[in-house]
Image (tube, rainbow, N blue to C red; front, side, top):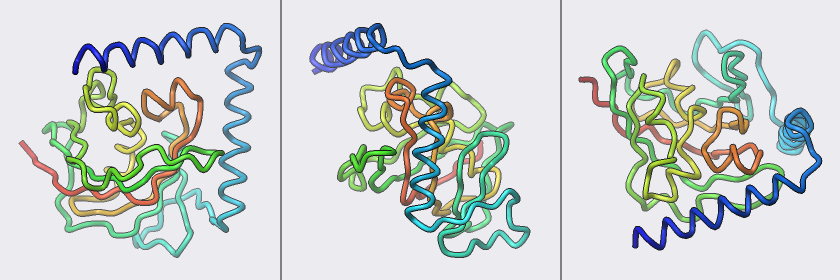
Length: 193
């Protein structure tokens, strides 16, 4: 199984490498294209973007806060039970994800993943935010610094929607140069050491 997964990853890597060689699109062009795709998604879904996090922590329907530090768009559905993650204590975070949508397409990146084991990472250890060394394909596609951004504002059992630009995205996003929309992430458990 590991050999098959390794072979699949190798083939994907070759495709990306050869695709990159033939592309005349620069990184700046890809960023510009992504911004347009995010803006189109926001417009099509009647999303209002705030530049400040609401003091009450309550979001109106279709209202997102754009975190200036990360560029991640955050909509808090439920802020959780008050148990907060602590980067200094290296909190272990479990998060479940329903489907995720690659922007601009309607391609579902995490088809039927709600039943899978939660994605797990250690808050404060950036190396755990990537799925590079994971045998789990969902980690490769979904695990990113972007899904960590809301932890500054919410706690355990929180539910959020996110738009994650590729610069803060998963390993897959970094290779496809596409933003990812998470209709709902659920931070199911926070273990403070």
